[in-house]
Length: 556
Image (tube, rainbow, N blue to C red; front, side, top):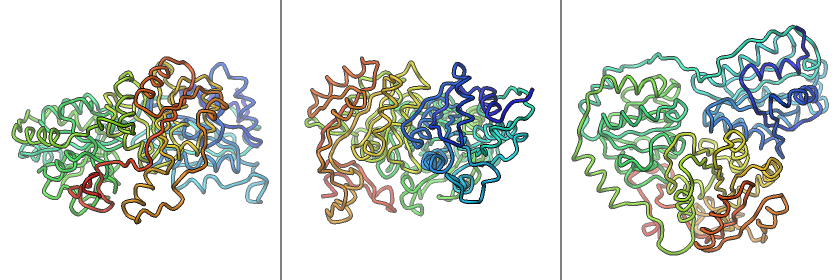
């Protein structure tokens, strides 16, 4: 049967099981939107307030479900507005397919109105990208894009389609797709030697990252930790892969990790790293990282092995599959002295909330206590992000969405929209700083228009918190361009954008407002006023060993 290119795009999305698209229309993509209108009962379109919001929403949809997120944008500035969201997904291995439309083939390369080489622009930040100039190649290209996005190490793929292709016709035949996460069972590396190291270890430690979440390795990880009899720490992206209430859990590792995790990893004799990148925020000084330990690194991407930290054994494979092999072949171990030492450190160096006052740790701990276990916590980037990672108790995978690699301020609200659309039965809470809120407040309109019951918690300290903290610690209190003194009223703003707003200044006010927000079925904004000098502790300065831990007392 002959269809236009626009119809082929829609039919291919249906093949791939796509039920939602986030986007913003424009001239070059009008043919596709016209076809989407005719299929609105099969594919929901969520109109965001900005294309960047659409990219982040597709990202949030994907992270919270494990399915490919999809966004649309028109040519020129519409396409370039997706770039930050695509880069965010690329850094954190999120499967997103971005479909843009460009000017007609005859207008390419002539500086035509709203023409831009979006394929060239996004080459470094996608797994792959395409520009389709022949309608006969359109269907297979879209199918291939989805296959690339979801297979192996997931990531974003961009498909740019010229406008004349969307209007031309070609034969189309439906082809049902396998929409499951695709990974090979092959493991490359010395599995026997890795098991020998585990047999010999006296002080093993497990470090888990986003790869465990992506592969769905939660159950296998729990079994492995018990068999190895080892403590478990995580990266920011690994949140939720291991129950944070489990006695083996020691907290996050790295710059703002717990003292137990940082000291424990520094003192272990074997580190089993699962689906991690060993980024600078985790490793600190790579030369001193886990210096006395043998390191086993499991990752699906061979490029990550020995990239940032030199390891003793690299195993290239899916974390879930590798852990299944470990669990079948590893005899149960017992390390009572080591585990007692870890328990003592957890007792000696707890992450405690202040007994008095209203601050970030308090509000995060209250959200954690009052929210259901399947609540999806989204964050922007900054101090509030670190407090969320430190003080929220994550029990399930895909319940923490945050921009880890790129550190994108403005990510959270769009991602929260995507998560709320994808998970209608779950509560979604975006924890934001006032600086980030200023970058994406327009997406409150999207939440309001779609009556999404998400909660926006603004940790309002009237400064760019994390930059302000660095200026305090490393720049002699010279607060250049980090103080907000414009008196923006976030409650009035929320109400103007169709949301309910509460301003809170005390613990009692916050507890009351949070309870009300959790009972509402429309978007709510909580403007939480805290001190501008509240900092994130503990902290390891950039490039320093993980044992060089600063606290509020030692940093004075």
